[in-house]
Image (tube, rainbow, N blue to C red; front, side, top):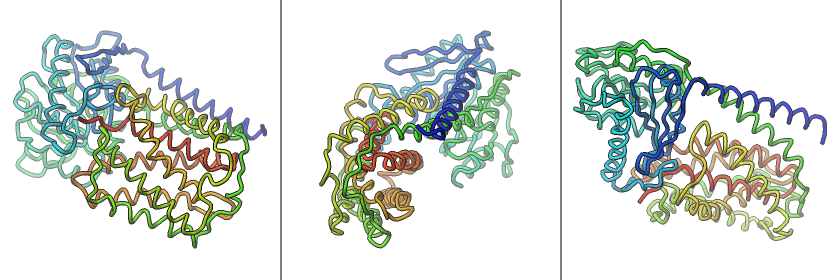
Length: 502
């Protein structure tokens, strides 16, 4: 291995090691305990010093898990609170299905609210049956706001990225609304409207209205530099929530504010960089059909046509065949998109995947690539960001998702690789795919609205997979290695993160 590869590998390992040390060191001074409340997985964060006895129940948003709310839980625990996180039904490692899905929002709301009720009862046992605080993000923010109406066992509510339908001047009690400054205008306007209910004029940001004693306090904050997910990690979001609970409970507790964002960035930058020297250990599997790739003149129509046609073909088509919310639509979208791309390749008389070469040869390196995606990148994701390890029914969903994504990745790799291939074609083809998903949402907003939340995550996967698969092809000369690995990695990601519905 060349010295440059060794240098990059050592530098990447240093970045990985140092970031892991800081992330794990942040847990010092805390007692973290996993529990089962009924069937619901929960985690309790306590200060090892004993704390102030006040408890906050923290709920994640759509397609999230309790790991996503760790920054809030650890910040509150370092400030003396007992914080409880949990996985909603259908999310994370909760074995219960989210009944209703998006077809019956009333039923799904009842399912999720019942879980909040169960977890609130559990949290109150930790607080010696004293009132507790509720903290929620996105979907959960609206759920906890509605749940806390007219309840005497809730002392304060912190709602991150909430629409706040039904909020009044006095209910729910002691409400702070925190929205990312980069979020859509409808959310920032909702935050100002909610706080404005407590004053006769327009509400000003970061001004507290009302009174904590009777539970009428109101406040709204726009977290600087944060969007929908970033608000969870933002200093504003964490500090304002902690200070709000202090005011509601009559406390003056302070402690370390979770700042994992930059360390997570360093960790995954190191893991991504490490993939480059590791790719140099792959076997060379050059095969004939990729001696010449497609130039822009032939490439562009094949890349653009599926982006336009796929949403139109699936506009009215039934796609409810898997018990995974939106995952079934994504599976069909990948299949149709792959078929249309394969058709375009055939019309150009371009050699189709697998027409030459031994298909057994790419299996071993593809398996190594998939393991790196699932364990190398997935284990840190599961530990510090969101649930990424399957349980129960999720194991059975990986295979059909792999079948669905494989044709797309095979055709896309074949379309964008080869000597003389369109420069920038790989990135362009991903932009086309993302655009087609947004087109599908525009055609069926009620059915596919939550794809808007998922699209940025898919874009991140495409960027990471694009870099690694480029290095993989550069070494192996065979597009099938990256196609198989990418399909396995994305199939796993969809199966373990999307809500399971009944």
